[in-house]
Amino acid sequence: MRYAVIVEEGENSFGAYAPDLPGCAAAAETREEVLQLIQEAIEFHIEGLREDGRPIPEPSSSIEYIEVRAA
View 1 (cartoon, rainbow, N blue to C red):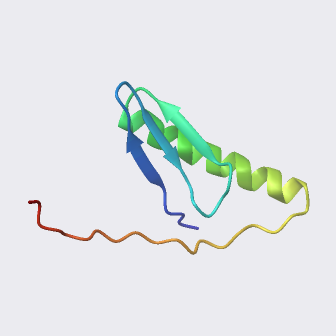
View 2: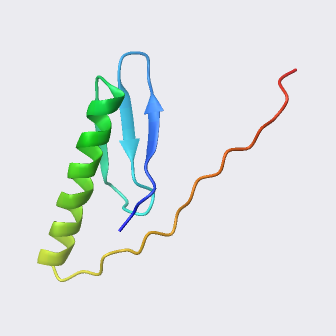
């Protein structure tokens, strides 16, 4: 499965979350680290859903970039 992941850069760290998996998030000092941690978080989240007998959400989010002119 491929889930969309949103990565946000803060002043001193990076955060990431998966919109299709509510509550699944990670934070780290570097972009590379946060991508590794969110992958682990997604795998852990799905494992927990399986163990609980709950359905695994199908990936449905996508990302598009929109260009706009800056004034």
